View 1 (spheres, rainbow, N blue to C red):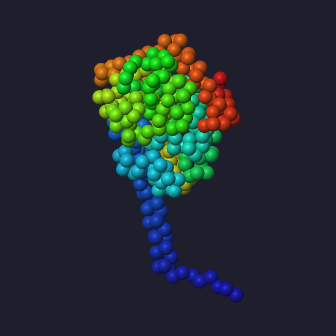
View 2 (cartoon, rainbow, N blue to C red):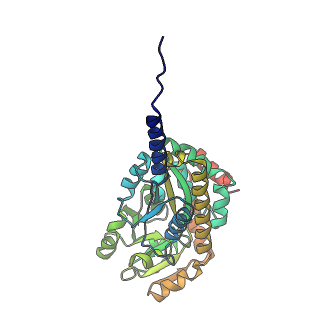
View 3 (cartoon, rainbow, N blue to C red):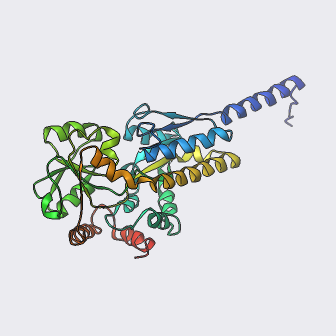
Amino acid sequence: MNRIRKLPHWMGALCVALAAVAGVAADAKEVKIALDTPPDMEKSGTYVWAHTFSEHLNANGVSAKEYQRGALGEEAERLDQLSQGLLEVSMSDLKSAAGLDSTMYGVSLPYLFKDATHLDKALLQGGMLDKVNAQLAKKGIRIVGVVHLGLPAGIFNTKKPVTSVADLSDLRMRALDKRQIELFGAWGSNGTVISWAEVPNALQTGIADGYLNPPVVPLMFGHTGFIKHFTDARISPSIRLALASADWYAGLSDSQRKTVDDAAAKATQANRDWLNTRSMELQMLEKAGIKVTVLSDAARAEFQKRSRALYASDIMTADQVAAWVKAAGL
């Protein structure tokens, strides 16, 4: 008959002490937050989110540290680190999550959402964020924040005012991905995929003539020396994502998870409050020497018509598109 040996008192005490130390070490693990822009609370909506998030964590017993753009790798590297639990939070592009579940591309369907409030309603009340997170969890990723960069995306270019779809016919646009290539094609233009790091050189050498982005982007990244025109087309919300490691999030204690959830909610509200102050962005462009063009109602209607024809594309399934349209209340 086997006997259970009783540990000496000193060994039992040592085990308890070691367990306590291990628990403290686990609780003290630093939450690394990878930034995607310079740390500018005035110009960067993603920094507003990230800094508010980190401040709340640090103020409530969860150690957090911000890492400057590029310090923890580029987009693909950070996504890989998140999925392996090596990085806790990253301010990432939409493509990072949508590459794992294309449903997420719905946030940028052109001319689907009227404004940020409309998008938030589809994400939360419409259940689209929960739907996407259920799929991303299988890949080790979780969206903890949908973050606005500024006013809705418009058309920047180096050559001329764009007042209609026809004006794009002789412009070659920088594309983020295949989805934007298709959008430019629907507008009668053409595009080429160029990484963000290569954009300044591409625009200055004529490899590309422009890009789609919110008004603040050339101001933030120093492109005002060669970007000369902006069309306030209000194509879609300008979104980045706060992505977290699903393994890290699942491994938090109940109290830690509440702190993280509260931090994310506070950061999201701070981003929306910041967004409500951005009406001056068009004036900032004009002051920087970029001519702003406002589309006529007829011109905007033509952009909308051509853009919505792309909803049923091979980027998203018909069911995915239908889910977003339903969540948007259309």
